[in-house]
Length: 218
Ligand code: BG6
Ligand code: MG
Image (cartoon, rainbow, N blue to C red; front, side, top):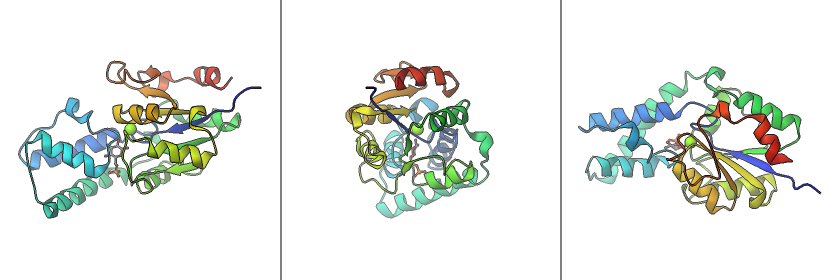
């Protein structure tokens, strides 16, 4: 008998192209504090919660700030980020994703969202995908950020699936680590060197074909 599997998708950088907006908002914040923040350094922030991201950013800038100031900066970053998110449309769904989700629905394969973002429901609403997911786990529901496996384990629970039968699609190092720590199969989207801990890596979402999904399902 074949084993049923389910998928858990990260949001930012996998379903939608919001990773660039996060980067823009963090870079502008860094610049306003007087230091630069490169795309390479941004890899450390991918998949990481908003609060932890600020800690990493301030570490890069060699800055120590009082909690009150940090709260102010977190609000400022999110306000800029939301100004981009509010203009989002379905056009910002990454290549191949619509096709892939429709393929999974057609084949009765369940899938959930497993995102660190507290803005995830708003983004899914904006791009018209909110009703396609069997379950949604976002940054409002977890206490431990990726690379902790909590977000994916909760996703498996909501899907009523064993972790070993779940496949995670992730663009972040922290997310791949979280999937591995949850004993799930990990698919990385991005650079193969950066995501070397993933079980499979595809350069971008268009390369993750329904043929490949079929091979995992069967
Ligand atoms: C993750 C992103 O999906 O969500 C991170 O990769 C981001 O870059 C994190 O910091 C939290 O997002 P938000 O929307 O709650 O600030
Ligand atoms: Mg991501």
